[in-house]
Length: 417
Ligand SMILES: *Cc1c(COP(=O)(O)O)cnc(C)c1O
Image 1 (cartoon, rainbow, N blue to C red):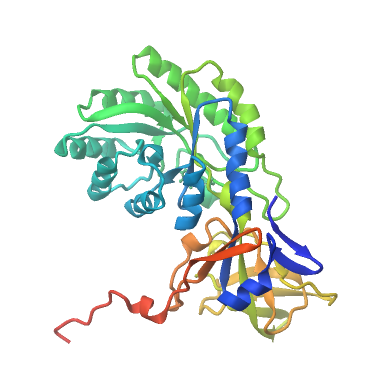
Image 2 (cartoon, rainbow, N blue to C red):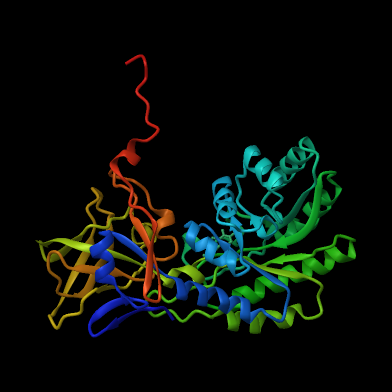
């Protein structure tokens, strides 16, 4: 459920007309619903109430400071995958002891700053990385708390680009090699083994891959305990899907119902890393229709938001529902909704049946709160777009629109020219 609904034919973000927001802040514009974000966050917190847990929101889904701060105020932590994300999480007030750090390519600098910040743990993805963390921790005379990211070889049955838990993927340590890696980790002087981690993919719409993967991980935890390696933190990653079109993904309650019985009686703290399922349907992208164009047997609705602002349709062929901000009784057309970028791959929707729309009118691209702004770029020298948060009748800009000067900041003319 989200709080972007039409009332008397006009789209509202909570209790604020979207039209009012675009008139004040311009387009393209990302709009987020505070109460939807909070509700989705609390759905996890309440579902897992009976078991010790930390909800580490995945910053790569949406890393705006205002949104992170909302979670941190409610006890949330962070899942980061770069030094930049760590910086953002700390700046937004997320406590370091609630931050986990994954990613296959952590640099020396990034490892050092994470150690100095005293994060909860590194989710380590290879033997080489483990040794590097051990070395860096030794250099600054500390012990690095770690979990190993285990690849359980379970098919999450999602889009190949967002599937991560199979043998052929670059992520994690193959489950067959896990024991050996844990023994090594345990023997390294500056490493403290505290956890185990898995994340098998994103936009999962079935519960069984979660359960199957967890069962494999728990067998491993038991084996580790036998060998004297204690696991305190069980990090099950993120990945719950959302409804973009007609998917019916499980919700946190169903996840808890299937997972908690497996954890009964175990002395563990559960970590979850949801991203999409919290932020996805809590945000929309609003765009203005610039032109209508009749091609050969095809109509194009040309809008002012492009693939640089919302990459998912171009990158994954992802579906986003698109609807007029102000409803009308006009007939339907079938059209490609395209942006101004000079690429044929620049589209928000293909062969989409939409209500006839005219120049100057607004369209709302739904379910754009996750992997929207964070994946955006300045391609074609388009300034970063503005973001607004709405709470009831209140609203606030949470990111200023970029300027042309922002585009050339840091560029240098060489002396030899
Ligand atoms: C992307 C990612 C997540 C978040 O995935 P969602 O599908 O957005 O919930 C969590 N953990 C890791 C390690 C990730 O890479």
